[in-house]
Image 1 (spheres, rainbow, N blue to C red):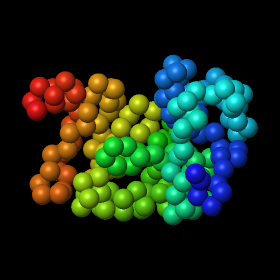
Image 2 (image 1 turned 90 degrees about the vertical axis):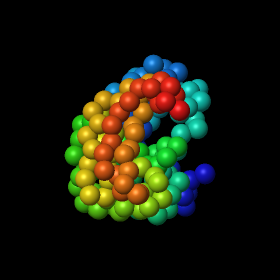
Image 3 (image 1 turned 180 degrees about the vertical axis):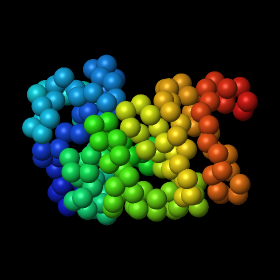
Length: 170
């Protein structure tokens, strides 16, 4: 379901910033089946993960035309615990430009009170955005997790640990 009939149209940025397991396509590289700005060459037979994917711009009418990924260079997705801002590696600072920077900061403020995270992803590099600072986490591997250290609801530190270390300590 899309917001107000929104469609991808000429936007294909998800085909670059998202990994596609079925095709062994890594994050940050164009899918070999994508023609940027035109679409998917295997659209009718695309992988299930592509069929089921919708970025937040497609489904959330609160995000105006400036947030369309082909314009903003940002693909917004949700995670189990917040929002992920996936930035085109060709425009690594796109998320720092206005109006995006201010809105991302507002999400971080709201997230702190609602125990939700805002993570910016540029290629494989991740940055946890908190209301008063950013935590550059570097490359977070699939078997790693971000751990936030809190004082009340305020994020005072963020680290990356092996998921198995969390399970052992649980």
